[in-house]
Length: 218
Image 1: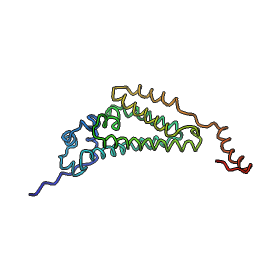
Image 2: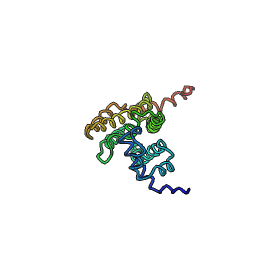
Image 3: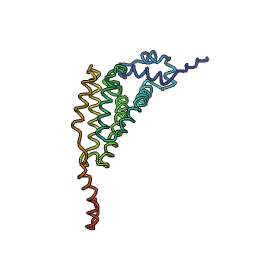
Image 4: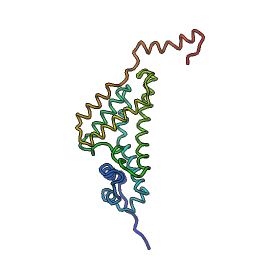
């Protein structure tokens, strides 16, 4: 018996619609019927394109990152670590409270109360990629003297991510943009200062002094 071919569809449009379902209902609460109805496709087309509900969710997370790439590029192009953190948190506040978007953040809301361990792990992997990028940027800032050498780049990256996730939770609970921006502003007041000009000058001269004494700087 000859079976009909799954109909073709615009993958990005379908993923955006599936994203809304996962965002509103979470992974666990999103049924295949919910997803296929929102995407405007039938189950065979979903399975042919994504393999499974979990495969669809992975593709949605990749699509979410793709849509946020311009924002990420703008954040990491900031000239100082403090401005990177500020742009990241203010952007998180704006995005989470923007009426054009669903409240909160897909990465925070979609995997809550999920019994499938693979789903929280996948969400955690996407969060970890963002945290790792922040850590690398802050490590660079340390080398440039923009952050003190005593600063913990990994802890600062976790701090920024933790505040951003909290902003998303608050937005989901109905917090207004002004309230979220105030939290972001307060979070930045705890940011460590970079080296002063005199400290940077002393750090640069230290290896030369050690070399003159016949020692090797560590």
